[in-house]
Length: 249
Image (cartoon, rainbow, N blue to C red; front, top):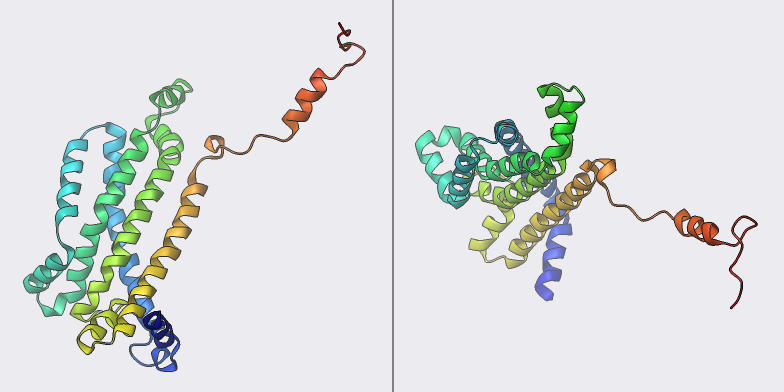
C-alpha cells in the first residue's frame, strides 16, 4: 500500500510535469507512436481483409500469416530492425515493429466482419438491383463495421502496451519511467509508469467499446421492449362493449 501511495506521489510531484521528460510530453510521444503505427497497419490490413471477406479467397493464408506475426517477439524484432536499419533509422524500426504487431487484429476484424454477414442479406440486396460495389459499400461494410472496430480496439490495446519498449531505444513514451526506474531501484517510479500505461489502455478501451456499440446498425441493436406493449395488450383484453367480459361460472 505504501508503494502505491509513493507511486501516486511521484506522479503528482511538480518535477514530473516540467522538462524534457515531463509526463505530458511522454504521453504525447506514446500516443503519437501508437496512432502512427495503427494507422499504417490499418491502411495495409483493412483493404486486404475486406478483399478476403468479400471474395472468400485467401482466408487460410491470412490466418497463417496472422498467427506467425503474433508469434514474433516484439522486443527482439525491434532490436533486430535497429541493427539492420542502423541507429539513424530507429523510429522506422520501432514503427515497423508496432505495425507488424497491429496487422493481425486489424486483418481478422476486417475479414471476419464481412464473413459473419448472412448471405441471404447480400442476395436480397442484389435482388433489389444493387451493383457489386453498392452491395459492398452500402451493405457489407456497415454490417461488418462492429467487428472491424473490435479489431481496431484490440490492435490499439496491444500497441499501447508494447510501445513502452520504445523507450529502450530512446524514443520516449510512458515506458521511460519504467526503464529508468529499474536500474535505479526506484520502484515507486516503475509502478507509476505501469499505472499510467494501464490507465491509458483502460481509457482507450472504454472509448473503443462505446464506438463499437455505436457502430452496430440501428436495426440490429437489441433494445428494451417498449413500455407501451403491456398497456396495449392489456387494453386489447380489457372488457369493452364489443369485447364483453366473460360471464362468471
